[in-house]
Length: 480
Image 1 (cartoon, rainbow, N blue to C red):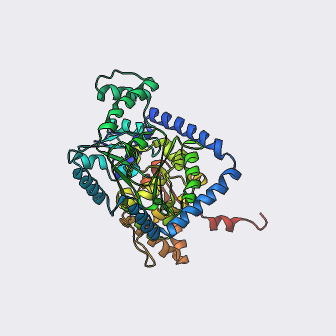
Image 2 (image 1 turned 135 degrees about the vertical axis):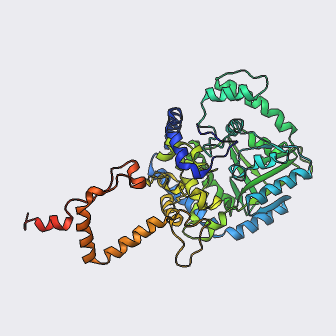
Image 3 (image 1 turned 180 degrees about the vertical axis):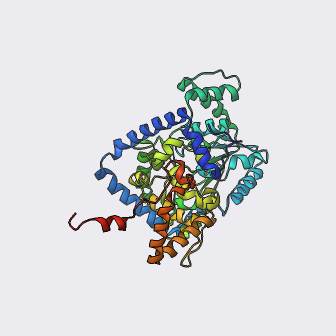
């Protein structure tokens, strides 16, 4: 396994991390088995194109329509939530979001937070930023709780601990949970986790959650989950803080329903999840339960960069189902931790460059065979392979035609490669010189270097042929 302090793995080390993962047979078996299982479950619902394509077309249209009206829908959402007693906060960066969390926690003298599953909170590294101020954040989703004990990032956006075996989890619980002996019985491990977390729900001052969808017309926060911990986090503590990306808004409640149907079937192969929570405000007069305060943090953190470019905007259609990961041959071989980002796999490779910049993530768009499996299963029609190619070009070249540059654009540019292509273009524009150069090259072909950069890592060296195509054609007899 990849080792790193806390949960941090540098995406700049993606290639080295990938090699470590490929050399780990247990990891590869775990992921191959898990991906096969998830693909089979999805196929039960979407085995026939006639079942999937109409619903996908509707989901894609809803997401594109919502994004086309994103600024006004966000303003409408804020107005409706404010009317219902929800306090809305805007954060341009992860640092701003963490500052809001800290201020809210201090305003109620909170010493800790209990968290439902939230990939956006992982994105801003909330747990570690709050720990710097002596505020503990405890994950209540079982998978997130496991990787928190292990000091790792989630390796999958739906099933965070998919890379862990039951034996490894048993060892973690025995090591970190007081008065707990080793067991690898799955039911017993679940019971241990529930016992630990139950008291935390009761004692926490602040509950934290993510948001799957936001409905502008009704001012509703929709949260999808299977374990019930999300409902506990959003109702038991006196303060509920939700955080999500600005792109998750839809206009009307009926727009959310097809997306919900696509999400559950694509993510875990379920027709519906166990819990669908719709939050419209804090506890009202006469109600016996629910939080006294509800806050929503709307995070940009690079999303507006993707939004402003019409060709990159489809990145924001994502509903975070993880289907692209489940069907990606690269992700299945190396797992999620190798990426070193909150969102791994194909979706991570197209969204992380916006969240983190192209400099540290320049290798991620190359982590694809461009087979198109991710595009085939994406429930909202994101052209992932096209976006990967665009980001590959952006990593190598400066923006052209007056288009706004991405953060870190051309960070992967290589002057030697650029010079070689310029020389090749110059030579090809001069046919006589080109033929002379090719003849000279064939005479010295035996001096071709054995090492030719990344090409010869897995291939034989490129060498000019002894005779060129023109010579071969000239030797052919008419009709031969």
